[in-house]
Length: 347
Image 1 (cartoon, rainbow, N blue to C red):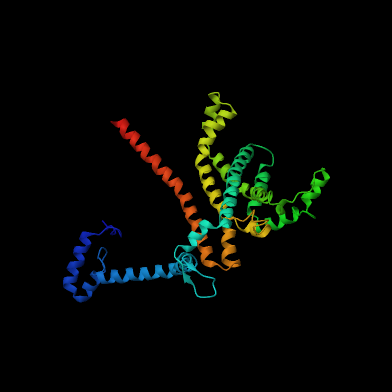
Image 2 (image 1 turned 60 degrees about the vertical axis):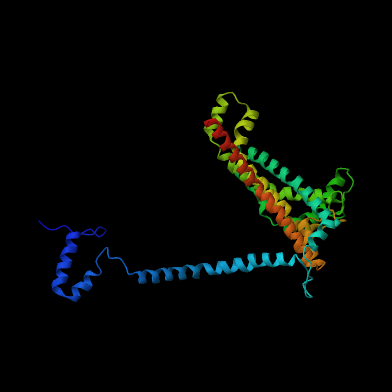
């Protein structure tokens, strides 16, 4: 009966015994051959050299990304933090002032106005964008004709850059030659100042932002709506739930995590608005549209008070960190309450 071949993945003790016997009779050549038998562990020195080679190869691939991150993120952040404690005009040697820049921010009425404008813009833009996004997502979640075209049209303004939006609406809302006042004149309404009116300019910026930013909320909310289980909706309908109860007790709880994400995302974006302001109003008229990021740019690159601008930037960064930490803190508090409740119920 022919002998079966030895499996490659399992050591054959009989085969190893034969090899050791042959090595005893055939000398050093057979011993060298037996040293390469399966199951033989490599030498520690060779393993260390192999690991060092693997580590060097890994760092060779990772080092360009690490250098880019250090050069464009970590080092500028550290340098700007150091700059915020100095009086620096980017030309003459800097002078250490400690917390003087931060103390000056508290007393600066222009910074206070920028903070008020930013908060007002955020309070108006964030709820309206999320509410309109949810409403349009509910409409576009229905089986209607050409729904794919409508969804695309809703998302197109979002991919247009803020600079292009600002240039476009600057022409449309021009007080003398814009199309908006021509339409109002046709309807018998007096001409409006729009972006040149201190009472209207910030509201107009909110409207422009809604035109572009609502599409993102529509797409994200629509994806969440399509993830709601149809069987859950059908069960609620069989129990007699109407549209209002279905929306309140089934759909809204299912999309609540997405709405929380949008709330955080839109708030962070609203607090960092800059390019639309720079293209359209440049902080005017009379500072009515000066937001925090534009104030930072103006102090650093227009007034050449880079240290003062860096201090304002870190004040904004601290506010953004606090906003980002709120959901984590709330989640931790909710988890502890649930644990205490479960422990109390177990007792």
